[in-house]
Length: 92
Image (tube, rainbow, N blue to C red):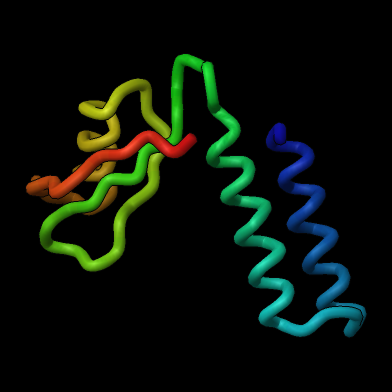
């Protein structure tokens, strides 16, 4: 899924919510599904989606990066601190 398609899908979900066709939970599910599909569609590209699990967080952080090491660096930048990593997994 390209960026334009993802934006259109999110826009469609928001429009359906505004029109009363779907509830907030369904809107959230559609938006989340769109973002997940967009984020994981880097298969075979120079970049990929990685799930990084820092030891200090209960939830993993998902980023797009060129390698597992780059993914850790991006997470450190997002969290604005060094992290000790429990695992790094490429999302297929």
